[in-house]
Image 1 (cartoon, rainbow, N blue to C red):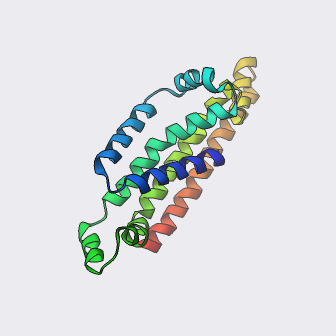
Image 2 (cartoon, rainbow, N blue to C red):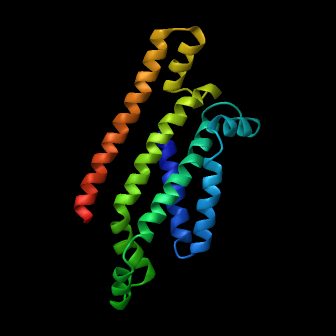
Image 3 (spheres, rainbow, N blue to C red):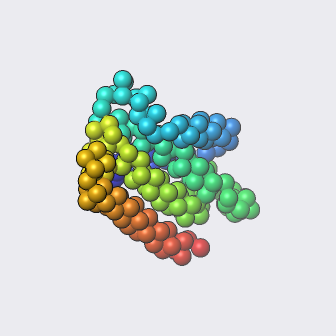
Length: 185
């Protein structure tokens, strides 16, 4: 999950850097990723299996695709919600576009960015659990093995561990978000 989220964040950050000053391109990419996000995860796994086979690689590709909509939308929203007068003041002080982006927009959008990462992490855990159906491993393996063998113990362990991991990651990232909100507000 960590690798997937890191790859997704790096891709989303690169897209934001490339398209932040091109509103139409950004909106088109957000729309495209929303269409991909609307495809059920099992269907997307099925589409990719002939190309990438069973296993972790297919799961990572699907999880990164699903994270893109959440991350792009939250990154863009955080930057777009910055008061335009702040940007005007920075331009008036002689700051370049890159300086404004690095020193003003990113710090002010940090809470929205972290909120998007938190949501993406939680969604990734849920979809990664389902990825066990394509031999990607993980906690879903215990859950689906319990379903297959009618083992209530395995079913409860797999379900409980998936829920606990999701809640744990969500709470940790929520506290990171709170700390950053206090720091940048």
